Length: 575
Image (cartoon, rainbow, N blue to C red; front, side, top):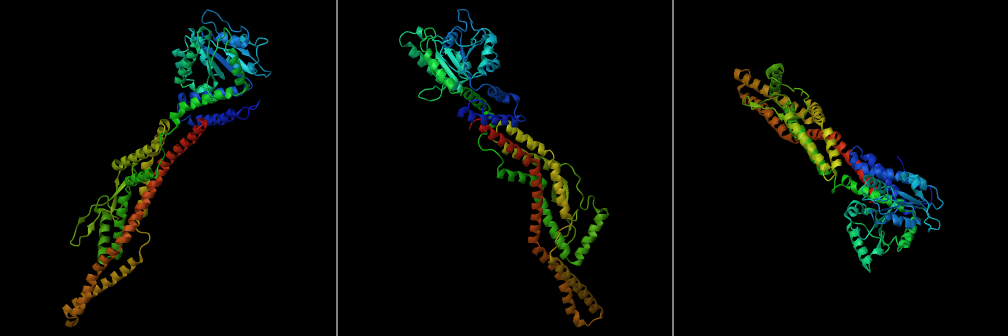
């Protein structure tokens, strides 16, 4: 990457010091934008950089000023008046100037020839000022073909050279100073180049009385409508002068203005600054956001909520809560209920119900939703016969979860792209779409991992489960003892008066077991709820991690890239 350092010749004024960082930023901007913007959008900025490269490699001691105008405006006559000799052809035949003519006041500095080579001025059309002509050291003056010439090649040559010169003297006459071609094709588009523009009303000797003043005032009005700032009251802008090349009236004032202008050695920098301003203005829609942009925290949270819903985090948390309660029931239930559950599980393991047990979900490229399996009342005790021991089965979520994921991605991409210029908004949406291609599968794997973590039940079992289990064993022993004692009383093996004690022992054992199970169930609701919430949180976190890696991080990378180019654009535009 080329960096602009100090000029090799005479130190330039402050415009150059301000311009070089802008050129460097514009070069960096183009490099960062090639994959986001089309070549046509960046072409003008690239042309400006190429022109700056070429100009700064050539003489900084010379200022190239072109004399341009329409047919019959007298620009060649003015050129000859400034040079002090007839160097450019003047005649009634139109167009008279068929190719550019140059006159060089070298001022003793080399480099003017290289400037003319760049402009394509023929060696036989390069002249020196007439002996005795007023000195304008450092000026390279060009007489261009007519910008309204009937010859297409002449007009093309004028357009090409106007992009390369440091400053332009537009010569108009009293008859065609309001010509639409001049104003619409040249002055209006070049309004930003006012500081390197001169507008000269020639042939004022043909105007009677104060008509020249009136024409100049009207010319100023037209230039103001073109958006061309006028250099008045010490303000920078275009210089407007009235003169007559035929009589010499006002030519001296123009010559002195040119002498001061060239002596400043700042025309090239001002011209390039205006070119950079124009290029930056055309790039404004491609780089400047319409208001605030980027991912807000509410947008991120909404995206994670969508993914949590898609992966079934809430349903899995509810199922985990019920699973904890079932483990508590098995740990704290009566021996008889535990035996019954084992027998039912054994029957399912032998094929009592298709798909029984915890079937391992096959990977389908979509997330899973989890639900409580259907249960039916099978006996007076209200026990549940469930298809799985854990109480939840995987359901293929392709028809439900994938649309949720797609909706989540569209929403977050739309939020992130809102307000961005078109190309960068499209880049953000494409980054989100690319990342979303593997997101359902990643969510599916996250759900499977969460299922595996919950499959064995709570990893840390409360101590009171063990205490309740021991108490249930004691109560079951009391129940058996009481029943056997009653049988002994009934058959006469024990005294008849002991029936009440036997009944009391049997009643305590029989009623105490279910009562303890109920109490454990009530006491376990809080821990079960926390267990389910933790399971939901883990799955939500896993889904959020998948979403960040697949979508949010690529989107954030695009937004960071945009911020980088936006900062470079701000420097290049001089903001």
